[in-house]
Image (cartoon, rainbow, N blue to C red; front, side):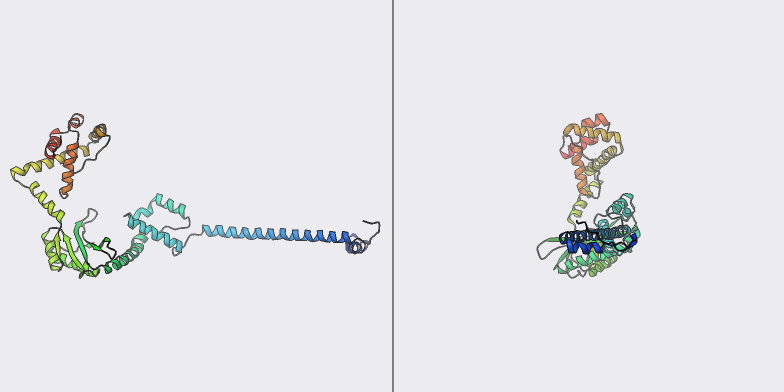
Length: 352
């Protein structure tokens, strides 16, 4: 800028400073002095931002590490998200009628692990003994509110036993019209029958079931089967009763089928032949495959062979009607089954 010598502050290099140079610039070269000061200020601000960026990156890194640890931490059983998942699994088991051991399945556990890795799936006992009673109590409370608003309720009643256990069960299904004129129905009680199937014992069971739901006084009528003990039980329980119309028809259908009268014996023989035909195609894979190919050749449709159940009159009629549509001649040639059985069915039902 100029030829003037400016002292640097001493003779040793360690003692040199820029103070005299700045003062000289301020006195003699003011424009240059202010330009340099401005540039120095800009450089300081840039350095400050860099330091802030470094510190911010460190903080973000710490936050990211903490978030990673949080994602890997298992959810506690009482965590709101974990509790919601457990409740939904219990509802799925109840609504879809699934066995409790579905929670032990490998595929189900893989799905849960993928959807929420932090969730710890409880065992079968937790759902059976802890969750099920809670869900039942909640559903029962909601149903009780709706039943309470009903003025009159009619019931259908049934008793049965299962192949899974030796217990005898009884249920009452309520039917009513709500305030919006919508037809409603739900199974209210279903429970084990203790003791013999006497009218007195059944009457006590029915009375306790109705009183449990506070609907004894609201009961309009109970539709029950035609067994004498159940009919008498309703009288003892002081509820109006009516026989099941479908069961009544079934009794009339079964009576001639079980008759020893020679004029009606052909019906029993017909059903025996139906059983033989169904058994033939049910137990022979080769016959079933050939019959299916014959059906596809006729109308490109395979029909299932219906078994005849003595307790269901509609299956008896359906099996006979189905037999009338079976390809009699081809079945005889390709499977070797007794065509007389099929011809008998066709004649009785009007088939050809």
